[in-house]
Length: 397
Image (cartoon, rainbow, N blue to C red; front, top):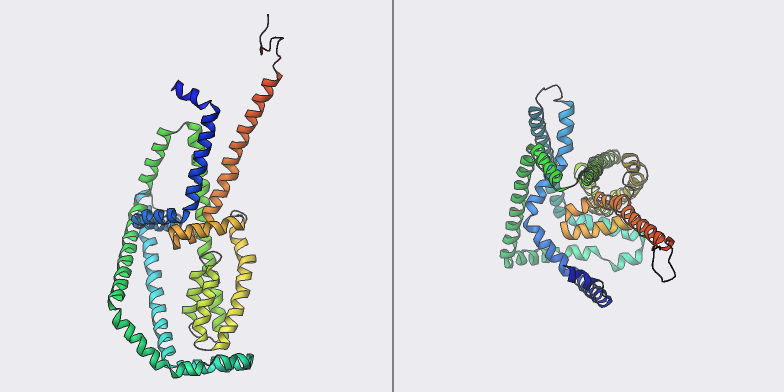
């Protein structure tokens, strides 16, 4: 051990280590795409367990709300929690079932109407183009497309028959995905039921492996992370409900069709930061375009106004200053989170960016500043010690 410490004091050893670290960093950065792909493959093995943990964490605030409101008079804490979990699970299941019962008929109706009235829709769009720009209308002839729609339909039918194996595999993978989500949902119920036991075991482990000061510091940081995540999840869902409700009210007043379908799409896509509202506006506009191009244009203008109001009025009121994160950090978090964790990574990109920003400002940066201050103090003390005539520091006769 002493020989190794002596070796570390050599200048050539430090230069060699710096060169090795530089080469390793270059290799990592030049192959970052492959590393992210490999990391995604590894995470996919635990995707069901991760999904269950995410579902449990997202249902936890709802269960706690039920516990504090509906079951607070029950003396047994365990009975309180079990009843709260059951009511939370029932709420989620009812929401999913009602959403499907509302959306699937409208989706089938919209597809049927589109197929049956494709000629009328094309004529309406063509007329709109003629009113906007006759030159563009002559270049983009949608009537010609409609005339050849039967040929296109035959080609689509031939493609389906020729690629039946791939289509079957697609639906098989979709079925496996739905089964995995079902297993994750069941796992989330078990995780919620055993929350106190998991919390107690984690606390004992941290106390056994950490010093008291380190333990208190870690608990404080975890409580902050929990507060940020809970606040973000709850108020993001509330914000999506507000935006979807306002959109439905406007569409009802304007006399538009497919109110439930479009408003649901707008609310769901509003959960995703930055790019979500754009996707919702595009999908909703396309659905309405097939019915009435004028309604689609009005919808897009209203969506732009609604998103501006949401970004500058509704969200600041809901979130306050607790999630003040730089825009660049949010964008990086969305890209990396989406690449590694998919949709869940995109949805949770902002709170994780807020946690990283808090950790850097409140933990990492103060620690580095303290270390620098301590080194400067030791250097000042060393310079303050007088030297004798022979150059010996701190020695007296």
